[in-house]
Length: 361
Length: 244
Image (tube, rainbow over all chains, first blue to last red; front, side, top):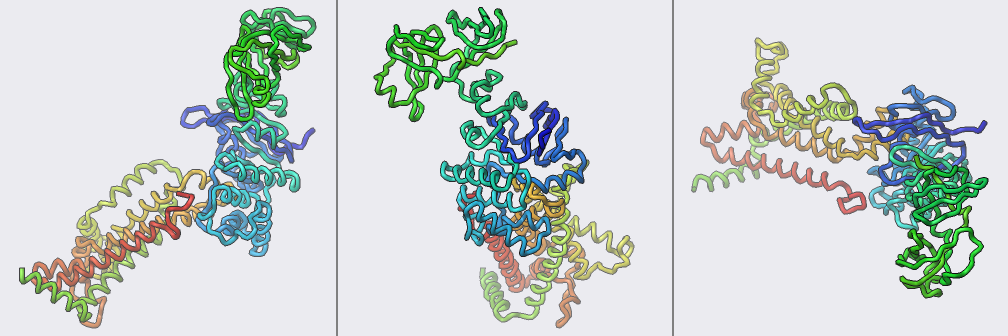
């Protein structure tokens, strides 16, 4: 049996009759970095606040280190083993040292203890020497690091981070990420981080829970979620560009043919013929050749015409009409080398194993 | 016209020469109003914090009543206390009617709702994230309230200054409870004549020089309070930091 830091069972939360979260059941291991991804307003912050015992659930239960959290006295003691970092840095109207010391003061720590913890926390966030700066004079990135230092000064066993880098510039964000990874590795702190940036989720976390409209429809590794999202909405959210409805026509021992608007796509699934499904594959798993008659080793290979080219930073997404509009992602440089133009005839191919099939009801 | 100019000239002379009567009235006014404000702040700030932090049945009604009392007419406060403190009244045995102590009590009645209500607003101005952060850092309920009050300290100080402004400038309750009794020379607390009641009396008696002198001093106090208020509201560093 795994050693869980926290477990929730069918957690739900209502505000003034409106359902914010429902049926959230998840377990997070000690020393794990667990990500919560989902669009803004999906309920991530509310979930984190309930896990930090700042708000009461309206249904379900939370246990932390095996201890139930329904009892008010127990909640206070357990809360003191955890810490929380807001998206928008909260800085109290006092100097940096006093900001960081506040949790220690609540715990009636001795002066020498406080001085030691504040010093260590400042070191950990790379702000040694900032102790006397007034909180209000810090930049956004510095403020967030001070808030993080304050959160870790009390040596919490679980740290909750609510979109900690969303309001920061890329360099400050990178520093915060580095600190978070260090805390996890050196102090074995259990970390639960919410983000709407999937790439950040991938960089930082082992497992991810997807929060959608107040539910937790999928928990898995980043690879699971990127390549085998369990619903259409998750697929769209994690950036799967090719999402099509279809019907299974044939299935030979798991090798299925799926009809998508007259285009026959081969995929690996156990679903029987006649099942209504959604077919998903990532644009970066599709290759494009300018020779429409050429051969490909991939099981799915269709000829078509380039409809449009959409620049995406260093990449270009080409939309190819081959009966259905298939998106293909390639580097901007290779698109330039190929001399791609809208109207070019071409061939797109992708592997049957790269296609993910979801049953529709 | 001449009378007014003469009045001003004499008023300035009264102030510059530190006329004992003018000084006596000013000092008594300041002592009464400062005491009333300080004592009232001592319990009104905790009460405001308590109301802010607790949810109870009828909270909205309580807040509405407190805010309505901001505009409590001073003569009504005076009348109410007069009935309580008069010989036949339930608190008559205290012998506070027509004493400076009674006036302090009357002004406390006026200042209390202002400080409670504005403390409440000051605390409500603190955002939800800050409240959650304080709890998340492991504060007990008492520690949380203390930190919130510290965070709102400038807004609360502004509330107290406003309360003092109301106390020093009111005339109705001071007249009814104090009675505008002239002090014996040398004994400040033998009288109940304060700036506002004295101005009222001197004007009706046609002693404009005295009235103008006291008026200038009262306005001066108002200016000082306002300057302090502005300093306090700007905060220690000013509003042009990242937090704004």
